[in-house]
Length: 125
Ligand SMILES: [Zn+2]
Image (cartoon, rainbow, N blue to C red; front, side, top):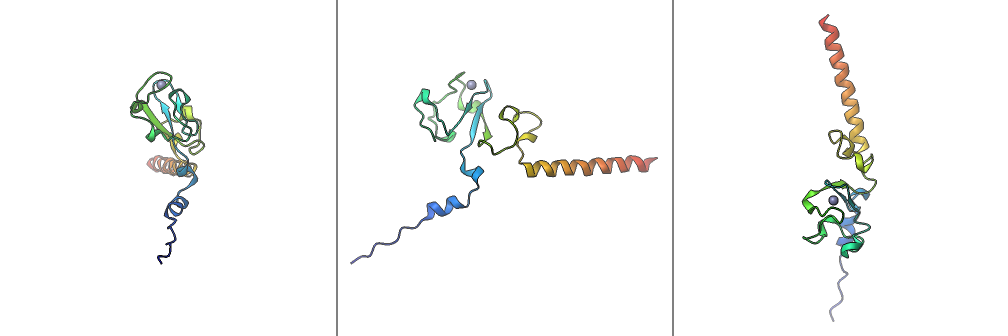
C-alpha cells in the first residue's frame, strides 16, 4: 500500500548553480618540470581513468615526468577558464590568473591612480 516517493533531484539542482568554469575540473601543473595533470585525460601510466580530479588521485600519485609529490603541484584552473597561456600563469604577480573582468577593473583602477598621481604632481608646481 505504500506509494513510492518521488526521489528528490537534489544532485541535479545543485549542479545547475555552478558555472561552467566551476564544473570543469581544475588542472594542476608540476612546479618542478611543468607537467600539467589534465583531469579530462587522467594518467594512463598509473591507471588513472580519465575524469579523475587531482584531489581524487591516490595519495602516492606522483608526477609521471619527474616524480615530484602532489604538494609540488599548483592549481592552474580549468582548461580555458583563466585567460592567458598556462605557461604564463605563474608569472607577473598572478595577474594572469585574474578573470577578464578583474583584469579590466585592475587596468581601470591603475589608470585612475596614474591620473591622480599626475594631477598631484601638477598641483605641486
Ligand atoms: Zn614534474
